[in-house]
Amino acid sequence: MDLRGSEVGVRLADPIVGGAVPREYIKPIDQGIREALTRGILAGFPVIGVGVSLYDGSFHEVDSSEMAFKVAGSLAFQDAAAKAKAVLLEPLMEVEVVTPEEFMGDVIGDINSRRGKITHLEPRSGSQIISAFVPLAEMFGYATQLRSMTQGRATYTMQFDHYDEVPRSVADEIIARAKGGI
Image (cartoon, rainbow, N blue to C red):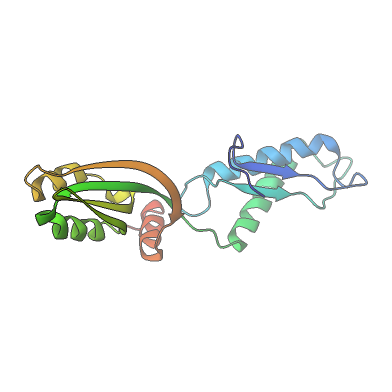
């Protein structure tokens, strides 16, 4: 299910037939799921791009309430998310550096040290254009570092490109920090 552009990144499909869950409880279930999404499951970051199907349920004439179904929706999502092996995503930036050729090795080395992936090198009248994807978290302080290592002669542009999975070692550190372990 492609949910890009959806308001909260979740869509509740309700294929239940025969009234196993009365219609007035569908909205509280949806609210419970959406609240669980905002709290996240790994490090407190919200969950996005999720499709949820309500395929079965039951109710009791006396004991059922909107709050009970809201809590049930939240708990069901948390249980399903734990089984789904969720991963953390990070924004990757498309970075283009224009540098004099004599600094190309230093610039490439610095991009690599920032977990960047060089995608293209192109010579242009005494300069080199280096294209790469670099995690946004690694780009803080880059302008100062680039100026320093190229004597102020290089420039760069950066724009968001896509999200990608955070490497396991980095994700473990983020999750531990979020849980107060570091």
